[in-house]
Length: 419
Image (cartoon, rainbow, N blue to C red; front, side):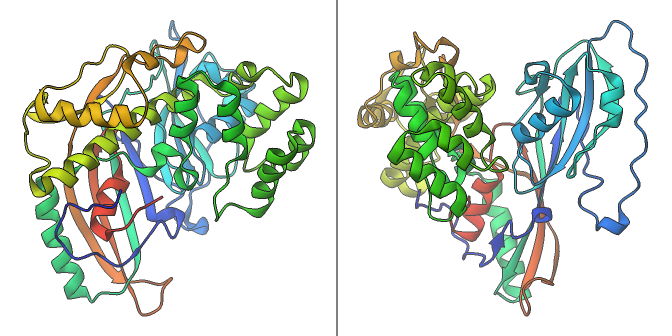
């Protein structure tokens, strides 16, 4: 993506320089917020963790907890929980995936865990609190959205220039910006999730697994990069299992462990990835197609791209774009022609999303609004950046409904791609 819709000058700064620069607090369906209370404070100011008191259980089977974490993605945090609580990840639920390079707070559910193990659980960078019992498991999507508190550092402009940019940007962004999926959807800097997903849709399982294991990117840690390169050359799974670092490649290690025992069972290797993670491959393909349709629309219609065009399907008063699936239909008119063009370029049909060998990855399809409108976009402070001498930093806050990306807002503000 190389288009930017807003007209404000680029805010010349750094996003996610520190973990605490990107904070995400989940807003649940009932409006309550999972508040960050621990890892945003210096170590010496953090309260001593008190022993958890779990209320008595009646007929409820799910223990709901707030999970605050720093520098862990959701799946890695849950893997630590599974190990520490001796509990299968299948018995864990969550409403949404949260960033790694961030401080985040979200609700999780545990099915009939051993209470003593929950009380004793302790992993650096993960805190569990506010236990309560429920009859309902926390499922993907069980949230209103997320509140973001983001610090942008190393800003080279003056305080007056910054103020002017933010004031104008806040006016523009109220009208909406292109609702692109963020790069996190595609695996961050490796940009691989949708490519693996496309191979899986074509039921090229071996190719998909090998791509996932061996694809590198320039800034990848050298130990992991070399392990991927060696595996691509040798296909020696046993050696790769030794070479892949446990800290940075837990999913890859699980796949390699299976392939060491069953060298030709790539379907089985895929199944070592948790089901919710596997489904992300299909989602990433849909998201990639959505982004490409939106990009073509902007190239063709420029400033009018976010307004209704011929054939648009309108949902809640706004034009939508295709997230393809086996029950999808194209829009009419010009909107539909753009959708068909992208699907043809990607060599995909709606039928590809109904999978035989990997039926759990099938998707009916959906539509997504082309507009992203953050709520309560606020500049909370401008200050001297203590980590970049002579430069400024700002903190902004805003709310996004579920399924939308803060980086989509930030890329419009700084006019650069964000990973």
